[in-house]
Image 1: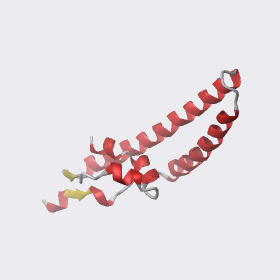
Image 2: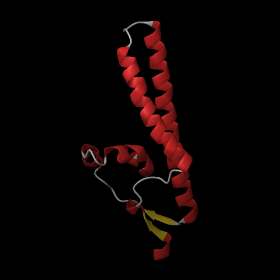
Image 3: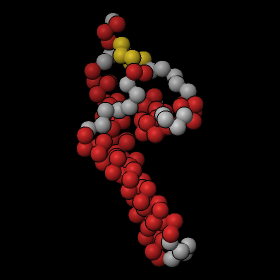
Image 4: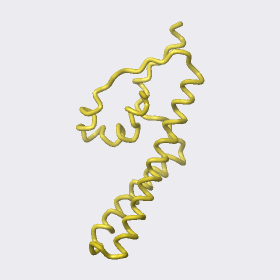
Length: 114
């Protein structure tokens, strides 16, 4: 019975494939670049609207990468184990920690528990 129980708290982030990890890092740099670019545009201009749409598409892509990794992790866990124990963590406190915040945000812990 104990072999069927997995301790999920040890695995902090979903296992990203090397391609997803590099895509995530590249996307983070692109968000920085596009955000700075958007900040330089004149409010109400057509160029600003284009830059805003480009940044929104990139944010949606990052969200899709995170959801895909989370879905792959949870599906794999459900297929391999009969019983899964999930620890209730204080996510707000971890988000306040500047060293943990990005990793915690990437994981989407509330979605993982759902």
